[in-house]
Image (cartoon, one colour):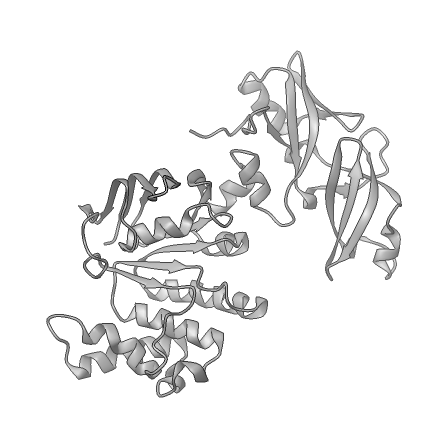
Length: 378
């Protein structure tokens, strides 16, 4: 069993800069948690405090119910995989993986060390590299060695600090899949740090989204995508990012309407019921619509005029960048299979005026403070 709790954890550096503030999180046994956010948001600092590599300025960190604030990293039952691999260049792969085992007390027998290292190497597919030194390995192979070095320790908690950021895009995709498979074979709790929201969405049981040292939202990938608590989460999760429009939400009796880009769109279905159940009043809002939820339209009652500025051919889809009356930057994501002809980009030349629309069921409503009107959170 390996539970982890962070209670009101805070980190303030000597120059009075607060890197992390009021961080509260309960991590269940064998859960895969991903910390995600832009550079400087405090995610790596939080990971280093869990590891014991950074002192905490306030609060408590508990592993399996035991406060570990004052314990050395080696006594916390954690293993860490670093961004830069941190392998010893003069040692072979086997020696790198066995290094921490040889420091254990009571001392392990060489037979036990050999069994642990070879078992981990087999899981990671690096058995053939055990006699090589790190300089003879590719970036992906070095990352497997770094993960293997952590695996052999039989740790309660695995901490991974942007382990894939130094790899190229193709290798990152491959390693993501390998980490998912690895997780199925290791009965441990994982805390994974990344700035890549694709990694966060594909790897995490739950995602912790951070900004400026504060947690913005904690939830499953589906929750943070479908019910972002504020404008920051809505813009950070999803690629391309959500479109935002200046709008007005108008209530007329039991019906709601959104006025934006010189159009009035009725909010019906579940979204209309939710607004009514929450007794939402008429107000100025920011309307959020994801690029994949916008479609080409010939319906003049719903269609919004969009002037094309750029088109990006992505293969299976095309991203149309444009401007509207109420928004200088809008992206529409269109599957190429829905388009006629073969020269797709010629249909969206810069300067061309097209019409797009969206259904009310996929709208997101944010108040003047940027908080989601329907899913404000705590």
